[in-house]
Figure (cartoon, one colour):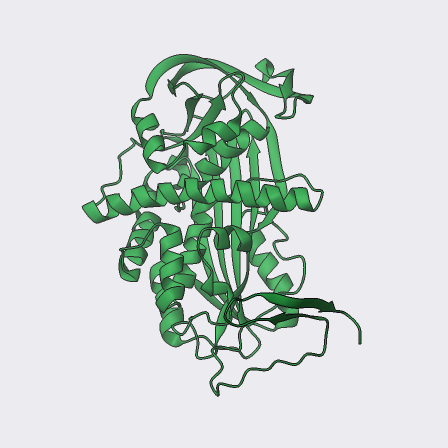
Length: 416
């Protein structure tokens, strides 16, 4: 299953937002028509795809290290697009270095916040027309706890550009209210995004839901129990789906890629499989937006015998703070963060969490993601110039010579 982790997350990262409601005609696929983009939007689409690969590769490295440190098994399943929308909403309230670091990480440096909003809004509106047989929905919300108040201009920007619901709730009741919202927006796939009462003053949420049926379904009778070998050489026996048909296919010296379409073909699942003897990590090293685009352009319709494991990923949640910090988002988490366009009170990002659900079987794929950004108050940049330095806990000391920097004495004091 680990070999499929990248394909699943990258595919989620390329999905955006739409909601079908064609009633009786929803079982008849409409003809696929590509979305027309302006020159600026085409560049932004390319940068957005590149963000998906950068985000995943950094997350793979950071989350794997954190999991190993804690003696846990890493779960590298992500939704880059859900993260992108949540961070874009946060960027609307940021300014200065905080804003620049957020837009740089998203790949949107050089684009104004108005252009970012217009691009995100266009995708929400356009993709609704792409495939009437596939459900793809996105929901955004802004939650204010107790008597905390964001700026009217900020809530209006989120409502206008992201169709975000603005909710006020008592902090003691926030957990149940937010979990109910997440469950509702993901068709019950993510019923408990928050495990505990949220800290802070306000929270941004993005929920993404996808359900698509294969254009050509796998025959359940062809599913057989077969061996799957993990990266460490261990193996398990699981249900393996089988189908031979014409699919878009391409390969290079490192890996092969096949695209399994849903509905009218507007959406598809790309599966990237390293060649025998080649580790997935080696393939990931060379992947970025440009190489992925080149690979897709080289894909041709070929007869392919596909064996694909059935699997379900649920209750998978990752903290993304360290991931974003590794991508250059630093100030947003510090007391010096500038979210002055969000609220009059000094704020910083307290946490960024994401939950993923992904189910793949003979019928198709059901997937969901929720990304939450918790905003908490910060002391801000010390207005009166007085810094508190109370040595009332263990400390370290160094006795040094000024001109050379030589350390004459150094000690750690834990008890006096």
